Image (cartoon, rainbow, N blue to C red; front, side):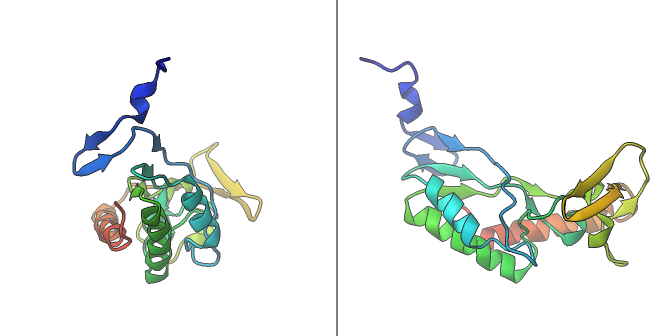
Length: 173
């Protein structure tokens, strides 16, 4: 008997990646980073390790490029040495099972940043007081969101480039 979707289990090459099947894990944010510091830890290692497969591809969850662009509590970061070390442990488990991992969702969410995470020298938290736009979690009081526009856009872009380098250091793919 032929399965209707048997092609999902046939090999495919995507750029430099040779995958043994076409089932890819899409990015799903689980908010499992260790606090304080938004560091990928034991729960994330277990989560990604359980989903890794020989010749498979996992797309990472949304990964924050700076504390100023953090969107919610528990979202992992990729802007500190401790976070890079945590992601290395995650990718090592995925690679040990024959899988690949791609950091495609490097995120900067200043419109969702709570004022608790802003610093005076913050690169991206610009308040705009938009009516109806609110952000809160069980651990944080409601707060007006911030706006991502302003004269510091180039600095945010530079942070993104820096985080891209850190993603390579974390041995993605």
